[in-house]
Image (cartoon, rainbow, N blue to C red; front, side, top):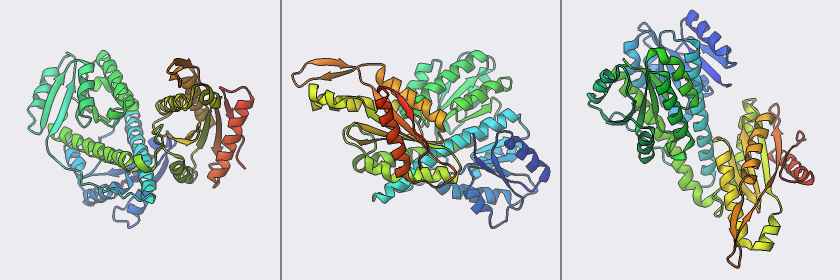
Length: 463
């Protein structure tokens, strides 16, 4: 996973150790030593993640952390605070750190925590970028104050296991937590679905309990309603490998069983704050864009929004030297459906194809109805191979199951519907007009039709 990371640490040995770890995963690493440097906030603004070192001798660390946190409300750049002192973790989290890493964990733990926060930032970046586009259409969403403190509603999912009682007693004795314990994944899923802001703690004390946790995390992250639900794995130190897998699947965080309730409460507050910001951004899109920027039939984004927003995505990709692909999809023989079964049947086909598109593409992809029976998908950070994989999933999802339509005479018929897909890539080395990339995808789509329909064609580089 690529990304730009800023290390702020006056200690040269620590800086170079962390830099070497990050370079192993091909991150771009920037370093600063002086926390009073007036350029610090400027350089942090352009990072994907900031590491800030704290030690008792550095009096500027906490004020700098608070400044970074205040700026992150606008930029979304997460901050990992590092410290040799376990007792300071809660204080650092309360000051605004998104995560705290104590002492020197394994390289795998470093990388897993970095991947998790960068993934969360990219999701937030996409939501923020769409919000900027919505402002151009006359919507000015308010930025609410995210509440601090208060009582946390917590669901503890745990099967029977050794050492369970001590953690449960401490958790239930915490005055700022309302804890409900469940022993079945279905019950945990139901509680999170009913209230997505409920934090879910998953106790992992064996490989078997870890596998149950993995399955539950995957189910939560695949459902739109619980996609941002805070999920924290509570592990036995011997099960650290399972925790790393959990972060990569979609867990928000992991802690050890002997964590102090003060630190756990601070981490819960951090995740609740992130959840509220994600939900606020998503709610703005739903309310503001629903009427003005979506197609009323398919509920996908419309052409007006796509042609305004996709150039932004392309510019962002070029600036970051990242791949960007565009996919144009056309329903095969759609005119025959309208002519033979009527326009109501055609609408049914459009709605169902749109639903299959929406459920098949990646969460960061943008799907729009471009006009008639054509759909457009923007794929950030997708090289030709990734774009081809997404396109094949789309093609297969549409073709694999017939769509039931009702004719003008009231008769129901199962129709096998297929699509032709054209793919084009923007050049990540130079600015390129949206129209040129779209034209390339359009030509590729027609080539797929000439080759027999129900297939994918990769376009040549746009001129």
